[in-house]
Image (cartoon, rainbow, N blue to C red; front, side, top):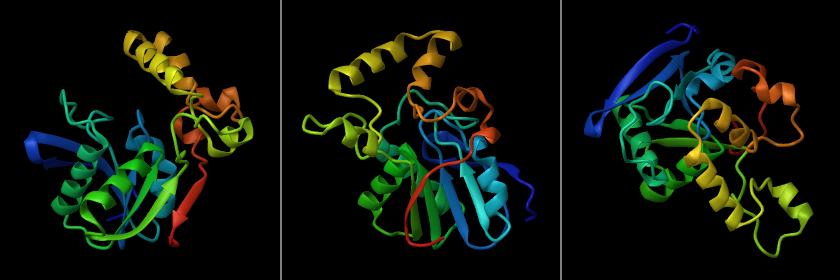
Length: 205
């Protein structure tokens, strides 16, 4: 396969079709996007890493061009979807790179299936907790990258997101998920412009 990304789909249990972009040859790497993002956001990583390996940028169910059923959105179900993709594509010694909730999906996969068909795991920009713990200082909250200060704030965010019906209502809510250190121009830019991410990994790529 050439380095030019190719659109593909894989069918898994329950009639679910999962879309992915693929490029390169060699040892496989699956990129698992953050919540609300599709594999298209990682096109720079896809092109850059595919010079030396086979890279698959996956749309999880309900995201991008994949099927969007009414249920099946628990992290454990997404981890089971990931296993189904690995089996359907007959991948072995596959490396996984998860961004944000994609990291949680990897941890869930490991918890459920161990190191089945896995090589290495890469965790990108995952906070240890969505909300701050009561005994954390402000400095600790900044260091750990918590999205919200406490559980009531999480409930408020959830209700606001559920009530948003237009792109104009949704945009400021999603903007809260970005670090304040990032410029407003980067937040508003298209995916290729904002592809720099912090990586914490287990094992070298």
